[in-house]
Image 1 (spheres, one colour):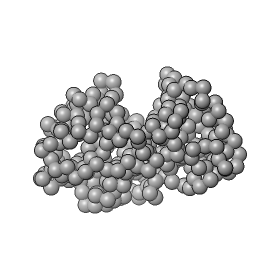
Image 2 (image 1 turned 45 degrees about the vertical axis):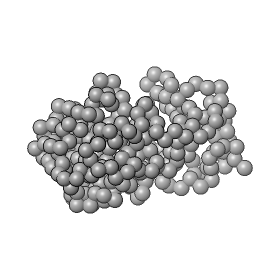
Image 3 (image 1 turned 135 degrees about the vertical axis):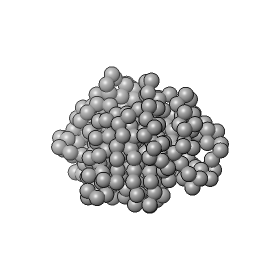
Image 4 (image 1 turned 60 degrees about the vertical axis):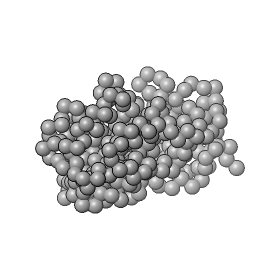
Amino acid sequence: MSSLPFPLSTLGSDSRRLLHGRGGLYVALEHVAIDWFAPVLLVTLYADKETNSPLLQSILTEIKNTPAIAALVVQKRYLPKAPKSILYGKLPTQVFAEESGLRYHLNLDRNQNHGFFLDMKAGRDWVRSQASGQRVLNLFAYTCSLSVAAIAGGAESVLNLDMASNALSTGRRNHHLNFESALSEKARYLPHDLFKSWGRLVREAPYDLVLIDPPSQQGKSFQVEKDYPKILRRLPELITPQSHILACLNSPHHDESFLTNLFKDYHNLGRLSPSLGFEDSQPAAALKCISFAAG
């Protein structure tokens, strides 16, 4: 029997979180996240604890009986630049996140973020179910996983905006990875600061579906309490009474009332259930994705 609080025997091909320590459901592992990106196991450590070495040793012991795992990558987020190291095996030349029949490029050999957030699976599934025939605006698009889901769901077009041009370049590659040219070209990319780009967005409005998934705090580029209200003030210029909005916020310091109060003039369609593997002992602090209707 495994000594780990998660199984390695039935990993499968779809990417998923195996252990969400930050959800507070695993005693002494609150600082640990373990993700599966076939064929790589990624362990992220958010603090330097005495329990880290025994945990990694337990994983290494289990890996010997799990041929599906080609490499074990450990990231130490508590250190400057969040370095990664390979603790076991050899990292394949290219590793993808696989989810619901779609694939996304990963950068598991680089420090900081690897380019794909597993906790947004529920959001991607929702977008895919809602996107048919829709003109979509994807704000804070990052590597465009929501856009890929929208195109897969039959969106008429998607405009992806993010101030990080490198992330949008990965987003473009993600579209070409999944679709032929005709579908890939339905996605466009705008590498600008949202708060300096309203004119372009308004000229191309209206949008049937607006996706808002900002970073909770990113230096001076986005501050939740100051900048989220700015989006709400301009939102009426971008939508019609029939439009829908997916508003997201991954900040432990704000519960869902922060969003529902901001969107008090919109019809609240409900908060999405957490993605599998991201159950949390304090749901109010976890990722919040709430859908709203304009009319």
